[in-house]
Amino acid sequence: MKKINELHVIGENELLYESIQAQLNEEFQIHHILTPDVKKHAIHIALVLKTGLESPLDLVQIVLAEHPKAAIVFINDTQDFDLLRDLTKIGVTNYFVLPVEEEMLKESLNNLIETRLQGELGSSEVFKRGGGSVFTFYSGKGGSGKSLLSTVFAQTLKLESTAKVLYIDLNLQYGGAETFLGLESNRSIIDLIPVIHELNEHHLRNIAEKESHSGLDVLVSPRDAEMAEKIDQEFILRLMRASKRSYDFIIVDVPTWMEERVYTALEESEKIYYVMNLDTVAIRVLKNVETLYQQLGINAADRMELVINFAGKDNELTKKDIERFVSYPVASEIRRDLKGVQSLINQGVPLRKEPKEKKLIPVAKDVQKWVRYMLK
Ligand SMILES: Nc1ncnc2c1ncn2[C@@H]1O[C@H](COP(=O)(O)OP(=O)(O)OP(=O)(O)O)[C@@H](O)[C@H]1O
Ligand SMILES: [Mg+2]
Image (cartoon, rainbow, N blue to C red):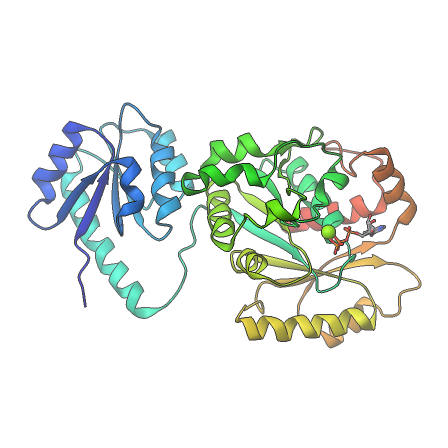
């Protein structure tokens, strides 16, 4: 078994670098590399130095974008608690102030290497980083309400919490979100292609459209088959990882058909909200989806929750029936309200507009109940 004793140092700070050299030179192989070369190296442990030039958060994100599994140790020359908090949020494992904490740094690196080795041997567990949770709306059946409910869910979450929320429309060919959110966009996810290898919060915020009522950030789909082709599975993976580092919640709307990009989004999701109607067809489709997931190796058992849509008096089945046939928990039940929804959408008005809104149509009210419960 190969022992990892390579450290990659990123960031120009002569004093800090000398101090690291003096302390760690004997035990570790130290490579000081330039930021543009980050992608050329296999980095397991990165020591990111405080510099006078770049923002520490950007430097860390550049490393994590290329090496999502790397352990990041940030080295500063003064104590800075605000920075420490921000760094922890984006997935920095350790933080030291040199020269005061030299001894601790050495010890911590040795521990880090130890646990890394055990981790590699023990399990294939993915490193969860960045804190953000991805909730993906999926259904095996078209027209079940994924786009409507995911947009209202995201707006509600943004309006009813202080969380940073990003909405991603992965219906790359047809879109949909912009209609429900009343957005007119000239930017789209496509604009992230040139920066996908160094994607950071700044890029995401620049390209995202802001929904004016809730302030929700929205990455709009290109709505163009030819453009959509330019987005591949790796792009989606990088996009999801960067989003998790920059936002608290990422709400993703995916199309019904299964393909690699949808697969990647589902794999990166903490929760899959499966939208279905109260009828036997919906149950049959769900059973097919389960088989498909099994074939693809998507383990959804402990993260899939059902969202019952179009609930009303004349449904073929009841929620109880569903619970008898299906083992996933029901996260929410949303009433059908054709007139209410249609009239707002035709006017280009989103279903949610303000934090403490009085007159909500039934769909918005049901989503509000669900989001509030989820936030508890
Ligand atoms: N609870 C509801 N009450 C009234 N209308 C609804 C409800 N849910 C969805 N709709 C309407 O049903 C239609 C289909 O919804 P939506 O576009 O969200 O489905 P989808 O699952 O995203 O479809 P697709 O598979 O085409 O992407 C839309 O016109 C939407 O406004
Ligand atoms: Mg849709």
